[in-house]
Length: 531
Image 1 (tube, rainbow, N blue to C red):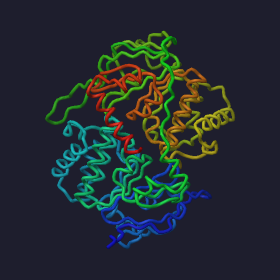
Image 2: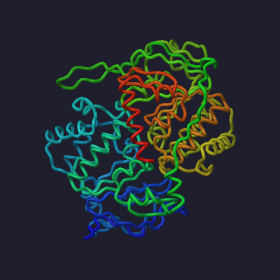
Image 3: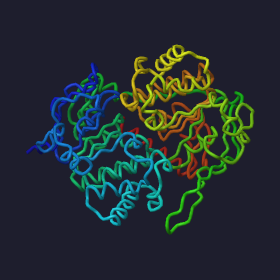
């Protein structure tokens, strides 16, 4: 006998003026079932579930029905809806910065959810929050419970968001790209955790992803979305082994393509760092003393013109901190030179003229794009600083060109970040960096929010820009398939140190360190899941 639906989408439409983001989506979710929604960025996946949770902005017009146990969520009074959201239906957001408060310690945020929905005492909620932080794999959970969002790595922030979502044992868990910011080993652990919770609690799940390897892992039913419509639906095994729609076949075939460029051994050195170290001081609690943490320890880096150096390692290994230290965006000790100029003694004002040559693309576009600025103003922000003589019309022309380079419609420059998908926002962040024609770009997980097909386009774009302009990249990623496609050399980081460094082919085929071998094994397993 077929399990009755706990959640039903009935002819759901989402419109923004004349633009229809979701076009008549209908499907059911049974108790204990996992339904996956797959498709490229902008296909309407997230818009569908955000509409169901009534989390879209006032400019969105939502029509249709979303029935939870027979009650239409789209028409429930606010009090009844709030009793369901977070308690009976919980959501893991694609970008953890949209779900976490930067001014409150993460443990207190989890405890607040528990006190609101589970009626726990302050002490019990605090204890359970620490248990949940430990459950999702964050080390030193008692200390991390007192940390603020900016003190955590991107992967750790996502794990806190997952802990918050599952804290009340919901009946339905909506996971919107829940492993976007996680390296392959932690990703496996988080997925095992979500699977175990689903089995133990009998949770139903809507799993949104562009990663078909993850979908293959535990989805019962798959709905493929394109341009706001479901173009193919069916059991997971059938969709993944015998797809009928050409779009589904394209998604299955998409993968980063190796560039196969030779190492730039004779090119001039652009950036050099020697004995680079970064320390952070963590506050003490009531019964603990302040602690000094070495985020990066005694690292040497040499980057030549036109070269890409890949930095890989698990979340919290120091990759992002090292990238920022190379740009003098965090205090560091040691020697750094750029174009044969010693940067070590330069203060913030002295560094400013060099900033246009040294750009950073952040991991989290939600946190780096101002919600109050149009896309055009965001992309041209650097031009107003470094090329103040340009007229507004000139800046607008440059913005249109930059958006076109990253495969975005130039008309998007008149819209705001909240009107774009996660992948579109990431491409805006890349356009903002590239518009200044830099010589060095530190790319911190630049494709983590992108589906595989768009990811391949972005990597092709980055390679073309590098070839045309002689750019040098420091490419930070937990995705070894992406690093393999982009980097001539790889540096593997663990606990703030570079434990292995060499040419990409040598590292990936003859890794010497057990930690590197584990990363490669996890990435290989993931690739086999997609194959």
